Length: 191
Image 1 (cartoon, rainbow, N blue to C red):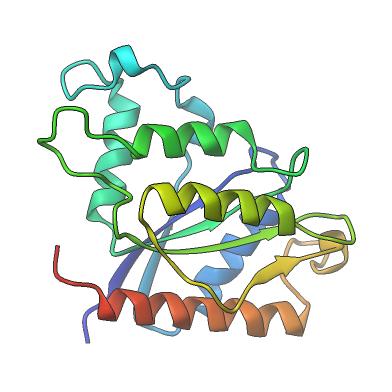
Image 2 (cartoon, rainbow, N blue to C red; image 1 turned 120 degrees about the horizontal axis):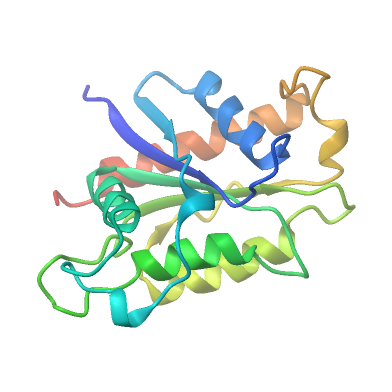
């Protein structure tokens, strides 16, 4: 079987981010059919500007992100919760990925198999942020995994001092999420 290329994006810029740690854990739990690349450029993306959103004017880092998403078989998005929603840096990246004003490039997020997860130190985890993220993906017509939901609450209790995911329930849910994402990829029409 072919290996699926997954682009993973953490919506957190924090050095010790629990969301980024979840993505690193996903790489270790990979069922063997997925190559997971963690995107590192979120901090450097400029604010979305429709005046620059054409193939000729887009900043190189935006063009690179769009190319990576188009080339990926699926996306794995981890979001913290800020003010009951997703962080602005994550929304900004999605805005850059949701357009094709020239009707020549294709829409990077359209029908893209996508799995979301998130962690937060609160008792509700990232439940509201994930709901907001799901609303964005309705507009982009992304093919989002519905279940299992991976909402890591009290996330500071789920990792050891070295940043390894130690909570077996979360491990099981994350493994199930990767399997469900692979199912979406396998069912997707050829691009």
